[in-house]
Length: 112
View 1 (spheres, one colour):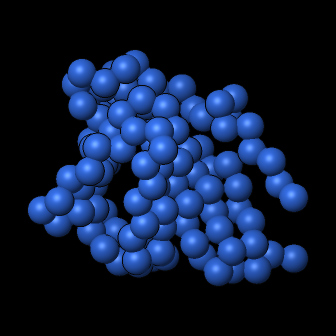
View 2 (cartoon, rainbow, N blue to C red; view 1 turned 30 degrees about the vertical axis):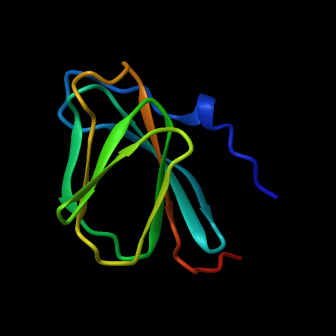
C-alpha cells in the first residue's frame, strides 16, 4: 500500500510564471500520480498524454477543455480521457490562490 499526503505534497504555485508548479508524487505499478498547483490565470495549453488519464481538482477550481467541451473541475469531479486526446487546463482569474489538479496516468507499467 502507498499513501500519498496530497495536501502536504502538492507544490506551491508561483503566480509570476505562466504555468503551474508540478510534482510527481508516485511512479507505481500501473500508474503515475502527478500534482499540479495553479495560481489564478495560469494554464497548461493544448497537449496530449501517451496513456489514458484521470484528472480531478482536489482544491480550488479549474477549467478542463477537450475539443469544444469545457468542464469546471471542483473537488468531487473526475474526468477520464483515453490516450492521445488533445486537452488543456486553465485556472480562472477568479479562482482561489491555490488550485490543485491531481493527474493519474494509467500506464499499465510494472515496477520491480
